[in-house]
Amino acid sequence: MDEPTILDAQELEINMGPQHPATHGVLRVKLKLDGERVLDADCVIGYLHRGVEKISENRTYTKCLPYYDRTDYIAAVSNALGYVLGVEKLMEIEVPERAVTVRIMMTEFNRIASHLLWLATHALDIGALTVFLYCFREREEILKLFENLFGARLTTHAFRIGGLWMDLPPGFEEAARKFIDEFPARVDEYEQLLTNNRIWIDRTKGIGVISGEEAIDYGLSGPPLRGSGVPYDLRRSRPYGGYDQYEFDVPVGLNGDTYDRYLIRMEEMRQSRRIIQQTLDRLPGGPIRGKVPRIIKPPVGEYYSGIEGPRGELGYYIVSDGSAFPFRVRIRPPTFINLQALKRLVKGHLVADVIAIIGTLDVVLGEIDR
Amino acid sequence: MIGFLRRILLIDIFKGLALTLRYTYSKVYTEQYPREKVKLAERYRGAPRLNNDPETGETLCISCDLCAEACPEDLIVVSSVRDPESRKKVLTEYTFDTSRCLFCGLCQEVCPTNAIELTQDFELATYDRKSMLWNRARLEKGWDRIEGHKVYHK
Ligand code: SF4
Ligand code: SF4
Image 1 (tube, rainbow over the protein chains, first blue to last red):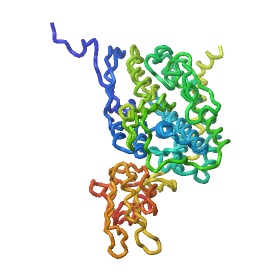
Image 2: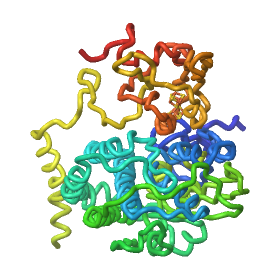
Image 3: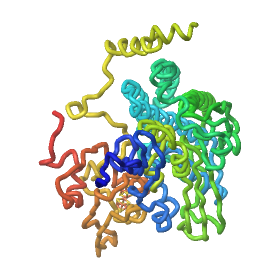
Image 4: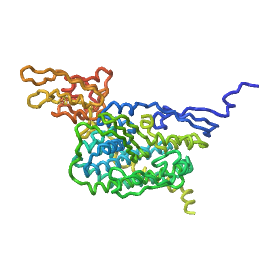
């Protein structure tokens, strides 16, 4: 009998990543293949671990904040919101109405920016280059707004405990209004390119199907959960930071496949635009920062502050021992938990679909590894 | 039937192509960055600068050390001596390690005299680590006025 060669192999194990451009960062997936078909997949993470949770233990409450921009660097504004809401709850700080409204407006802008980046890269992975360029154009407009208000484009250090850093700059409202007036036409353009496109449908329909019950069992949240028909959105189910005063719909999917998750995110962008419209219409005047003690020392206690980030439930579990340093800040990153489902979703699909499924889960490795 | 026709005649693909064709003749959105200087927001947090009083030319810094206290990375070192006559602190040296800076802006937020300021310059790349440690002379000049730093745009 001859020596077994690679040609005889029934199963083949290959690495996808960590330097694979389609894994959106440094994710390494160990794929077990039978020909083109995926039998099993294992994720290896941790290449981007910086120990943000540990760093927080050695910083005061104010100084922790810039580090959370760097966990999910695409949705830095949402990250800041979750943390400041938690600290404010612990200390019972009253936030002025204007700051609350601006916060909601900016987090929704961030949701749009994040979904745009997702759409851009997801379409690029599947092979539609044009959408990528269009999405980045709109995202650039949002980043310019961030730059004008927060002073940075990506690592925004958006909010401060008790309110905002500075008030809206002159001309900001007009620029924001201009953006949201033009935006629906832009979303229609993306849909014109993709929604009915045969190639897009073939690449996404029936790929990575997960039922609602299973999605709950996996602890999924955000669009991957809603794509399976579970109408769970923290902005609606457990309103925080003033979201209960706004009107918006929570889109849900039917089939729980990649195509439905795509449709949901497109609809979410429109809904976010609706919320921004409402914030701009009601934007009250007044101070932007509440009464905050000079040294932030929450009383002994713990609080879980969960918000609906663009990728799902983003939580901060803050434990205070009464000192100026948090005893522990545990971050519940949505994509870390959504990524678990990858193993389940890719089974039986082709290698090319693995890319589509990683894309549809919208992973950000900075957040997974923290 | 209609669906079938759409599929056969590739209606949706052509719709998409029509859109891209329209953009071929529209205004170019891209900024030609290295050739054109980007206009950044007034609040942009970039290269640090230690401001002098525009009239007297003396430093605005009163060596209160608040910026060093506020910095999450502890990268600012303020050295001062006490003037025996006026009993005031006089700044002797101020170092700022740009390699570790988060550009979070907490230092400029706490400064009572607006001495330390993060400016709109962002081209901070250098060839070695040593030159990322900025001393007082360099901070007072500001990045845009330091000689020898490469000019990307005329
Ligand atoms: S910007 Fe932030 S990290 Fe940089 S020196 Fe100032 S306080 Fe420190
Ligand atoms: S906070 Fe301002 S005045 Fe005080 S030491 Fe720092 S730069 Fe100087």
